[in-house]
View 1 (cartoon, one colour):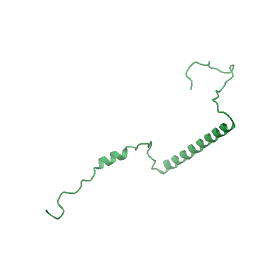
View 2: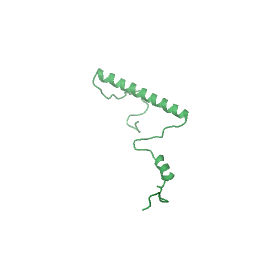
View 3: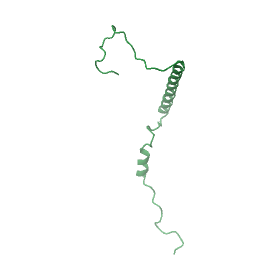
View 4: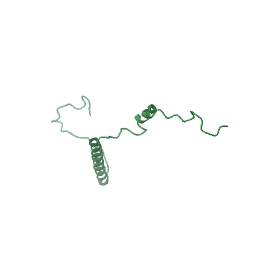
Amino acid sequence: MVQGKTKNLQAKASSSRHAAKSAKNTKKGQRAIAPKKTILVKQAAMHKNLTAKINKSIEQQMVSAASSGKLTIMKNTVSEGSSSKPAGKGKSK
């Protein structure tokens, strides 16, 4: 047997098309591609902070409501004479 490198035995380089295709698809659990532009990065960070603050305040309100007593779902009651639309008609939101 020959004890040197043989010609044309190099491994083929992976196609750039396959690499681009796999990079384009988001991974499982990922919903969005992170922004690259500086303005969009700042906007995304601000949105994340605001969402965290809103969620924290909602959780604090729920904790304070739960600590005071039993949680119940209350309907918004509008005085019967002042409502312009009859109840039960149309779509409810």
